[in-house]
Length: 265
Picture (tube, rainbow, N blue to C red):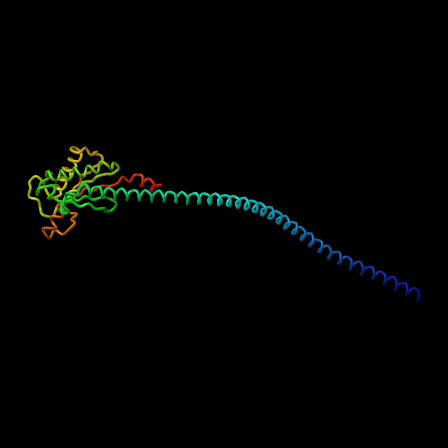
């Protein structure tokens, strides 16, 4: 009985020991797997941490660069604001200067027109007219005052009118003078001139010659041109209209160099 109990006890102990050994090995394997997983997770975490540190450093650099750019932009804006204020002030001064120059030109033209009108007061209205147009003074002299029909030689009364005109022009040196010849549309019959255009140019040139040679007007201030029949002021359908179109216009223009310089700026 005791032997049987002993055998049974030894068997039980061996079975318990074997069972205990099996349980510990499985637990070990589980723990090993868990350890490996933890090591893998730890390595991945460290890798992510390193990447986060790299990203953080990059963001810090970007932040620093953005701060520098912002400071530069703010400085540029401040400079632009100062420059803009200066530019507006400059433009205001230039505008005021330009307005003063324009007003001065208007005053010159009005005074010149009055002086010419007064100087030519002894001539009839249907012989000479003085007007302001397009920033210029126009002195229109009818054909009957200056020339015989189809001729380019200036009559004595016409020369007298030119002498009165020159007296005024010489008191206003900063002006330019253009002499334009005009005709009606009746074809010219003179062999000396090919057409009305040639006659208009010859008449303008003759007047310029008188202004510069006889009355000593500076030739650099004077231009001669012919318009022929192509700039009528009235219809050529009537004799009165044709008479008005047969005219010579002396166009007086102020010197606008300074005004153009200001506009170019």
